[in-house]
Length: 432
Image 1 (cartoon, helix red, strand yellow):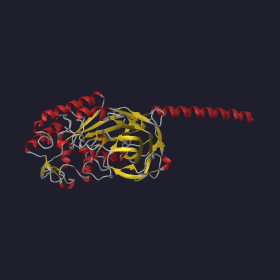
Image 2 (spheres, rainbow, N blue to C red):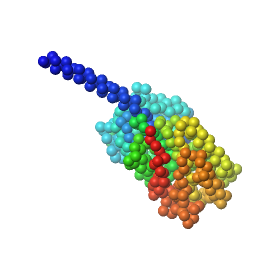
Image 3 (cartoon, helix red, strand yellow):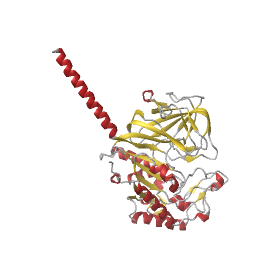
């Protein structure tokens, strides 16, 4: 009887292990990578920051959750190899502190260090870590050499941390903070393993997407608020992530020239949308949708930040949109157009004694209206969200609604970004 029971138990154990193995294999097959957080790589500011045998602790706010993660480190604008001496990922507790139970070392092809060639990006090995949706994650990078920050996202709207002491502090719970930075050096993405129905939405735009005008550390950019709506939806959209690929000052048709503002902003504004679309949209993990928010700077800059000879017509912008629509569709990606908000009285404050730069002219307003009319009526986008209608003052449609104005009459404040996010019908995004 004992032998019979032992035999039966053995059979049951083998069967259980086989089912468990099949379940694990099935779960692996049912999962795919999607981006849960991303930011656009930019060339460094004219005054390049250099770190000397120091550690960075970079904070990001993810959209979709997962139990397995990987990170992307970019040397896109570097002309020398970038050495990462160690990397860790953990759930953030508060400020620069992490939850120690969640701390994980990050490897690259099985190694704890990685050298990223110039003009390249490295993707880490998968890390087993439970990352809740809409949570803060800390990625710590040790830079053992004197390292110039040649690749960065300048407008993080997030406080990040630099170590006071030299050496590897990637695993420390209480990070030894020397100073803070509101940029993201080198880090450009975090992916999660999602259920097979998961997909990423890329918000591809300018400072209106990047979050200029919103509160630092509050995650009130309109893509953040859209991610919250998707996670709170009862219609099966929690596996949809939102990636913010906005760049302050970005244009659709032209790179930002070095002569802009005497060279002060030339590198900051980055490559034109047509050039960076592949890297910042098509190459994102699991992307199925792109929300397009470029064009207003093409209209506004000539004669203000850039030479008047760069004057743009509505036909030129529409031709650029058509290029992006075709490229998205070739990759099976749906593209959603958004109208360009008003800019009358908009200005850029400069350091004294320089006078603020203004953008609006009646001629530019005509072009903006022509472009917006085409976005609304052409039927060439897979969907349209009329952000101009959301943000404009009904009594003066060429100006922002005062309640949504961050103060420069161009960028919406927190309330304006909430209104923008709420204008997106969730039916535009069908998971699976």
